[in-house]
Image (cartoon, rainbow, N blue to C red; front, side):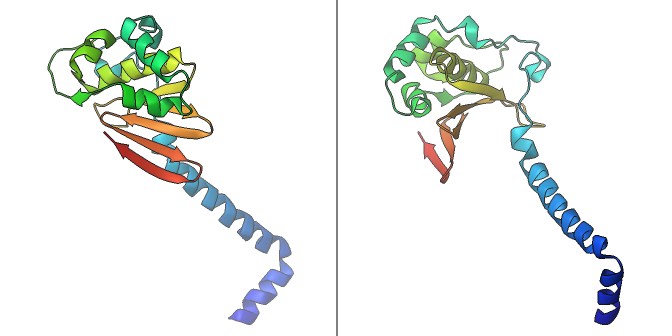
Length: 173
């Protein structure tokens, strides 16, 4: 059987190159598909949970609590970690729609994922940190990711995950 393969490859040298190319291409496709759920699930927040609620961080960048946290984090080496540390937050489920404004959330420290996501996004926006909302596919959940110094930070309710160039670390509050 081996001789038949070698004869075929000798007769069709481009076929072996094509097979190597195909293997490499399929490996790349597998990597892309594997990261698809995390990288491509970011979308506009206009229709979060079909409530048509407007989650604009610009709406809150001048709130006193947003300014206070931004001022505390402005000189931090890693601003994303500072934002996580400076906003005390406990997840509570509530039935009302809309969001708790950042000032109220900062005072009572309790809210839903959408409340803390808007607050964190407003502070990151105030600090000129690139960030976006993420809605995992098929979930009624929202969180924020930021991009700073070549690393990605996932602010997901009460924990922060750093997808660093050196590996993954998790910080729980």
